[in-house]
Image 1 (cartoon, rainbow, N blue to C red):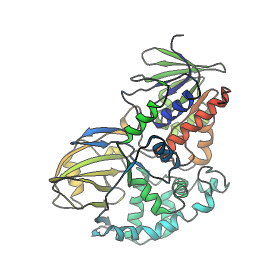
Image 2: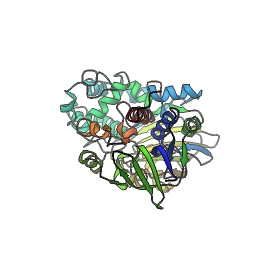
Image 3: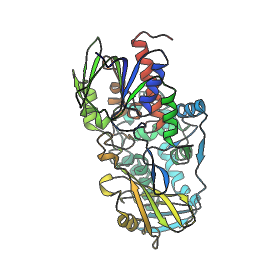
Image 4: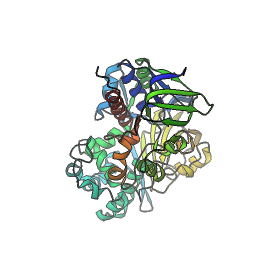
Length: 433
């Protein structure tokens, strides 16, 4: 067959790019099949509203060893978010404003209590099942654990909104263990976890790091090639694109997000455990929206109740006559990324006279190649699904932030998983160097 290589990689997000680089540098021929017309997956740096804006995954931190190693490898720095000057929070039916420190103090005690078991239950963040007791905790929900704290109404509202923000989705079915894993990876300190989520961006944007990894690889990249079918046996793999073109290989890395696994027909089909995990899905089903408003505002953050269409807003860029905000909401269906009037109506719940000039976002939940935002899992996923998803299916190896041990939901988790898949394939193909 003409289109033959040692390894096929489905997807040119960070997991796929890293796996392809590692395997190609071991002397294997690697081809990446990417459905989109660009690399970088659920990260996407795009020119919008007069700036280069990150429409997907964005933030990195030195508490994340895999992404930090990649930045160091390519000499790429980070851009620090300016200090926030003001905070708004809407809780217990009342709008309040004050300093960012006041808002953090509302969250501090409850989060310390909420996350206190992380050191015991997740002593080794990159071996999240090392303590068998985690399996029982994996059946507990974030909402249920907040109930147990018996907080005052303001603290309760702010805590629920904070965790709906982290999950980018509903917390009623959210796995408490996902929160514990984030805390453990951040040295069991929730302020470090919070800083990791929204403080440091990649210099030149996520595209700069993705391109550096690709340029350092000997892999062949084929864009605009969604895969429809994968036939595999003990000898090798044949992938068929939607256009009917076939590609053969000895092994494969599949970096499809959990919600997209069922869009490819595998023959024989993936294990029942993998299919059940994909069918059950995960909870990162929210929205990220960029909003340009009139005037130069103070650098502020704003939190609203967990049920608001946008429950978190942060001033990111200040210009002479406008301010650009980034906002998140837990339900993509509640946010129209093209509706400036709707965004203004929500923002005026915090700042009554604010005027929206423009909005932009990407609906990842209805993007056929994503169907989700960052992966945040349901109860039972860690103990019942993750080990099976990480188990190679013959010569097929899953990789991506959905399948990471450590920083699941982040670029770091995708890179970690890409390394793991590459090492597993090299061992399977008896490549030692």
